Length: 118
Image: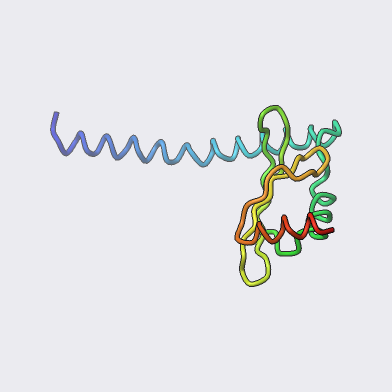
């Protein structure tokens, strides 16, 4: 086979696959949204608004990213915040009741110390 033709076919295949991926991602996003909606309606998760109100009280800062995922048989919200001075904080919360599962970030030690001191 002609090397130019072979390269053209490979490029055509790559372009076709690239065109299909956004559609697949959009379908996946719709499925994720439906799963989250059903979980909320079934009372398996807290509404995001209620969870964010709790987070703002305990961890002031700007929420820049939120994800809802199913991990080890339970729903978890993963939040990323920017705190004062540009410090980053990542929280993983049980979506059912909002309890803290994990905290990571620039000022985690200070956060844990503050929590124990209350």
